[in-house]
View 1: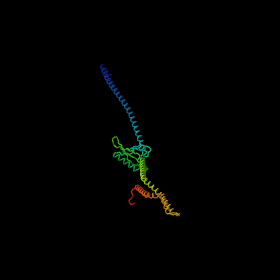
View 2: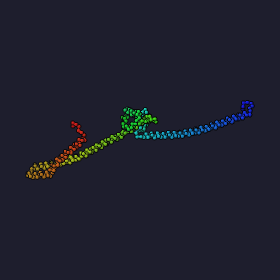
View 3: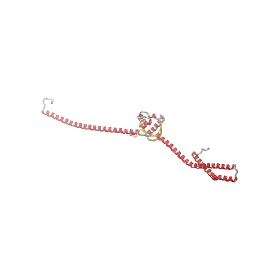
View 4: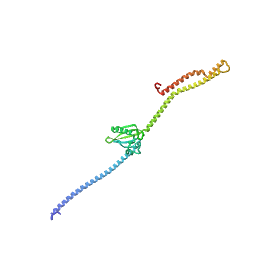
Length: 305
């Protein structure tokens, strides 16, 4: 055991002491290792719990982001205006259903997968690109600019357009957002309203002119009736006088004068003779008024006519 044939008694004591010493240190190391293992286990459990909680929070946050994205997408798709967005390279990055319909696509997938510029005419594409380059350069909004979009197939749509630069977290311009509102029906209604207003205005002017002309013409019409009666009575007087003059029966001059006087009295000849000049003058005045109104309606007479 000790490497010699005979050993002193105290050697066994020394050996036992060393065993006790090693055992004490081993026990102390084991206790410290167990403590460290318990701490490590507790730390791993805490990490696992935090990881599980973090995964739950991440899942909840991802779900919220998906819901928000779905809500925003649904909101943008249901907007009545056509909305699109582009990157810094002016390539279409997306758009809503109204823009896809305006561009002639069945869904919004075609906005990114295909070239939207091919839908516009060459002149229209150049104008849009120039406008969007100016927005990317100066960073200023262009709101509610009215113009007409010309398509490659010849179709034209009146729109009210707005372009706004799209900025990243650092404030740098990363692209732009465009909003196009189809106002073709509104423009048509405006033109129809203008036609109606013009028609109403013409009716009002016509009504005013009719009121201005009606009274003079009414007086003239009464005078013409008077002239008609005068004409009829004049012919009756002449015929009666003719019958008296050419009557074959011999009658005295006095009787003929009495009969003639009676005829003139029955036909109110003296009264008609007094009223006729007044009616003629009034009719002439009415005709002058009507001619002045018609001349005012026609406008100034060209020089030399």
